[in-house]
Length: 256
Image 1 (cartoon, helix red, strand yellow):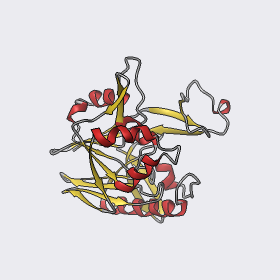
Image 2 (cartoon, helix red, strand yellow):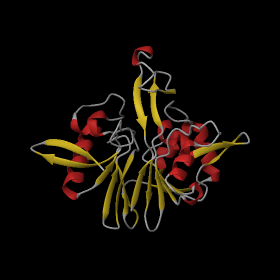
Image 3 (spheres, one colour):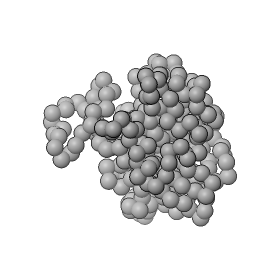
């Protein structure tokens, strides 16, 4: 198994829910009052059976009109058309924007050969357009053009890949446990988005159920430490891929 963090950079997010590129070396947080500052890291996993994308980033392009996500996959040594699975924790825009790419004025699936594993009720809610955290046009484009495997609740998608309905960050959020080729990987989406949220215990106001999400983070951290899972941190500032240690009720995370 090979694991790659496909970092898309840092962004500020204000009340309008717009993601504006933020360079910590040249930009000042003081110039963006009321904003949250996040980092975006989709992931790529190569196994003997699949080439897997875990969450799809913002869908931004580079100066050549190339999808950043596609270019990062190429930089890792693979072709975006060879992606076989796209595992989605949830469908907020900063995780789902890269599911589509604009070509000739139309939105097309970014990974037309892949199966997209999505909680059915998360997709149905995203299509309602009732929350600005979701961009409805993405899912309208995917509905008839992408190969979607809708799942419900928790279960095993295929040998070595389990999904778990967690419902902390969003109502139908899911996490993934991957156990194959003598390696174990946990992807917690926005319920374990960065190591700091494991180390500093707190309840986030932006979660659908903040108390549940906080409790789940502890559960995930303990299981990862006890069973030797490598954790993928989608919003990590520095340590996007790490292992967790838990001793004397204290978590530490080591970069991989």
